[in-house]
Image (cartoon, rainbow, N blue to C red; front, side, top):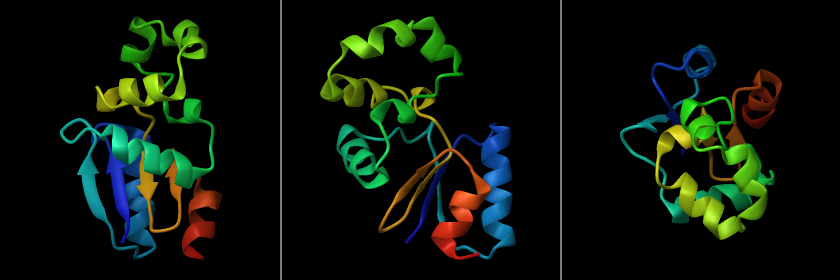
Length: 118
């Protein structure tokens, strides 16, 4: 089971979706703006990803910048950061690809190809 979490207007998400379709990967699509990740989901994904929590933040997004999170995040606990990410999908870096074994943040073709042996 593969879940592809994206924002449909995002060009990187569109590229990632085209890659999945070209490679014949079956997935469930989830619009991050309409169905925001929950704190529980984020905790699981963070653990599965093996990445630092800061990688889950959409640092180029307007909301991230307007909230001045670059300065605030270092002062926040992991739990506070997870709860903040759960408040608005636009704070979360995308696309996210969630499989049974791993979570990929952003679209890096070699990394995705490795997961699917494509």
